[in-house]
Image (cartoon, rainbow, N blue to C red):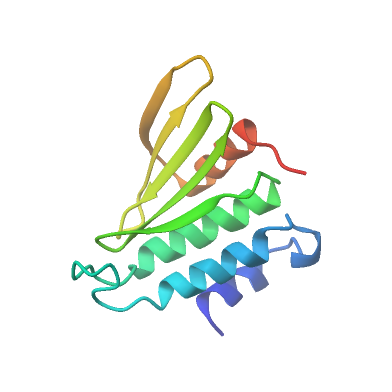
Length: 133
């Protein structure tokens, strides 16, 4: 069983009652996990397993607490970026190849916050800033 399937199986929230975007996001992580050396034409390594694992957990948590759909993108060097944007509010999460989560948040009043946090805390912040359905 794949790591993504195992993580979903271990959750108590069925896919059928999670956020609508969950399946698409898990499929995106699966595709990103298949990238090979040099995927960005600058000889970047494949997306690192710890980054994929951290992103998977973060996405599952964000879906459970019903945030808006995030954008997921690969980052040169083996990491991932997950972001939410709505009007003048932004939350960007950079997941390093070793699985650490760095965040940058821009609030409507122009305040910018940044630092590191756990994936679960990042998902909870996303739910506060970008509540979903």
